[in-house]
Amino acid sequence: MANQELDEDEINPFTMLLTNDQDHTLNSFATVHDESTPNQQDLHILRSIQSTVVIRQLRSEGLSFQLWPAATALVTLLDLHRIDPSKSPLSTTLSAARAGANNRPLRILELGSGTGIVGIVAAATLGCHVTITDLPHVVQNLQFNADANKEGVGSTGGAVKVASLRWGHADDVDKIGREFDIILASDVVYHDHLYDPLLETLRMMMLVSGDGKERKKMVFVMAHLRRWKKESSFFKKAKKLFEVDVLHRDSPCDGSRVGVIIYRFVGKV
Image (tube, rainbow, N blue to C red):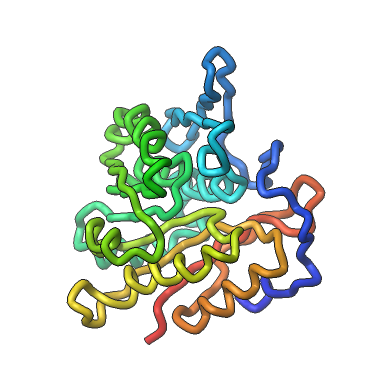
């Protein structure tokens, strides 16, 4: 299945990085904009737990402080999974991870968290322990959003921790540790100079342990909206290290010819 997403004739290289209308086909949650605050704060209503997630965006600070389309799609799938796991494309991956967790809460790492919405919603809907990460200058807003949702996340048994993680830096990986069941990310493949650092971080997290020995299987789930033809080089490099398949495809929106795709990466034996 994974080879289908590399058909470059289906890619519009002029697609915007961010879209204003994020009304995805499977969108299960509603968003309410709070215009009374100087910085945009949105209330995302999660139907599965009858609660809300508060997310502050700082649009003037750059792309890392805004909500991206693929994050919206992954949040929707997490919400729908809790409503009806039997119909969820995430069920097989999450069930396998839980089987290996020996009845403890799942431990999830999110890379390039941005606003942190995906990791926060994962903690709330799955009742798991999530570490959300990004570059050092993004951490303060991540912590703000984690703190704003602490009560709601805790009500389902979840917990969120914030940490700085620079891709490709072994010392950052060592500080965070490698004891995770699943790695999540959304819209992290957009600048080609980040491909190798991202893959190196995944290699360090998923393919080797701290002492250099082969480690247990860990799964990387990535939500991605294709924009540029050059992104095919990321997948070609990734397939040298990982088995890559498609868990879900969103229908196209906003006039685009492609929708958000949810990929699963597993280290090759």
